[in-house]
Length: 95
Image (cartoon, rainbow, N blue to C red; front, side, top):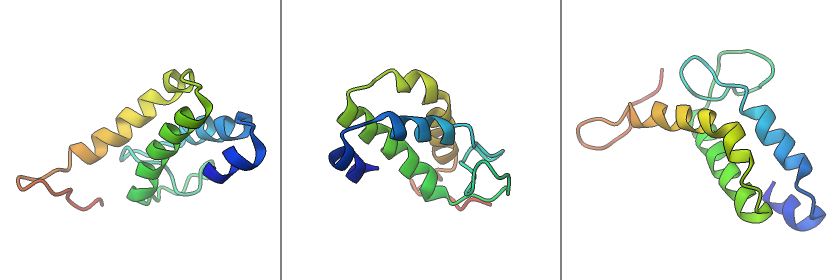
C-alpha cells in the first residue's frame, strides 16, 4: 500500500481495502487471515500491521474520516494485545 501512495497518487483503492479488512474481526479480537473467507485463523502480527497501515493511510492521504469507520476494529485489536500483557510486560501467546 505504501508504494501505491507514491506510484498512483490515488487513495480510493487503499481506503476501500482498509475499510473492507476492518470487517474481518475474529472472535479472539484479531483479523482473519483470509477475510472474507471465514477460517478462524489469525496471525497476530498481521493485525498489528493493519493498525500501522491505517496510520500510514492517514499520514499520506490526510483523510482522517476513515478513523471513524475503523476505530472499533483498531480498539479491539489493541485490546486483544494489551489484555495479554503479563506481569513482566510481555505479551503472552495467542491460542
